[in-house]
Length: 437
Image (cartoon, one colour):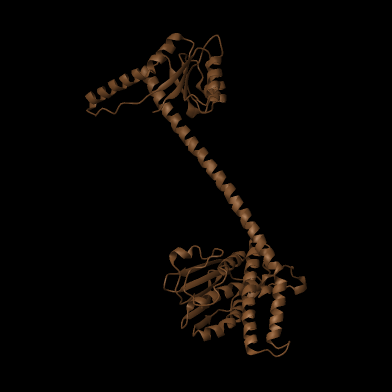
C-alpha cells in the first residue's frame, strides 16, 4: 500500500498521542507480526507476508484548524484519505460542524467520528456529514487494533476509489476525443456528399448534350458515316452511358444520405415490375448462356416504383455479372409473415464470410473474377440497402465462397385499401437521379 494521508482531530493531547502510537508504521508492523504468530500458534496457519503500511498523519486540536488543513490539502493536490474527528472539542466548533465543513471541501474523504457520549444522535450526524458509505463511528475508549483496522481498510478503499475515478476520467477524455473525431468525420463525409451531389448535378446537362449529339451522329442525322467512325462513336456512346450511370449513382447516394430523395409510394404489383426489369437482362443472359428463371406471386406492396425497379435492377445486374457463362439466376418471391420476400440467387463464385459484413457499405467492391468490362462504382448495394430501409424493409445476403450468392430483401405487404396515384403535376417536385440513365 502506498502512503496515505490521515487527519486526526481531537482536543485531548492524550488521544492524539494514542493515535500517534497506533498509526506509527513500526508499531503497525510489530502488532501485525504478533497477530500472525498468534494465528499460527492457535490455528496452524502459515504466517502471511509482511504488511506494507505507511501513513502521513496530521494532528489538529480544533475543528477550524482541521478544516483549514483539509482545504490546504486539496489546494496542494495531496488530499486526506481519512479523518478521525472527535465529536466534542470545546471551546471551538464541535466535531460534527467541522466534519460537515470538511465534507463540503472534500467529498471523497472518509470520516470516522469519535465520541465518548451516549447522547450523540447518529441520524443527525449522518444527515449532516454523510454519505453513509463514507461515515463511521468509534466509541471511546477504543482499542489500538480497532483504529489500525479502520485505517487500513478505509485507506485501501479510498485508494481504490481514486484509481477508479482516474480511470473513469481517462475514459471520459477518450470518449470526448472519439466524439470530436466522429463529428469531424461526419462533417468531412457531409462535405464529400455535398460535393458529389453538386458535381453530379452540374454535369447532367453537358452529359445529356454529348449523348444526344453522338446518338444523332450514329443514327445518320448528320449524314453517312464510315463504319470505323461509327464504331468509334458507338464506343464513345457506351462510355458516356457508363459515365452517366456513375454520376447517377453518386447523385442518388448523396440525395438518399441527405434525405432529399424521398419516396413517392404507390401500390405496385410486384410481378409486373419484376417482369419489366428482368426483360432488360434477357438478351445479356442469352448471350452468356445464363439460365434466368422468375417465379413470382402476384402480390402488392406500397413502394416508390422507380426505387423498386432500382433495387431489383442493382441486384439482377450483380447476379448477371457474377453468374458467369453457363450459370443460372433464380428470382423468386413469396409471402412471409405479413411481408414480401424477394430472393435473387446466382451460381457465381460466392462471397467470403469476412466480406459479407461490409458488402453493403459505400464504395466497397469485393475482389472477384468477373471478366472484362465495367466493374461499377461500388454503390449499387449500398443504394439498394438505403432504399429498402427507407420503405421499412431489410436486405441481406446469404453466401459462402464458391457456392453462389442469395440476395434477399423483405418489405411489408400492402394490406390497406389501394392508394390513388397522384397526377404527375401534383407530385412533389425533386431532382431525380433516375433521369441520368
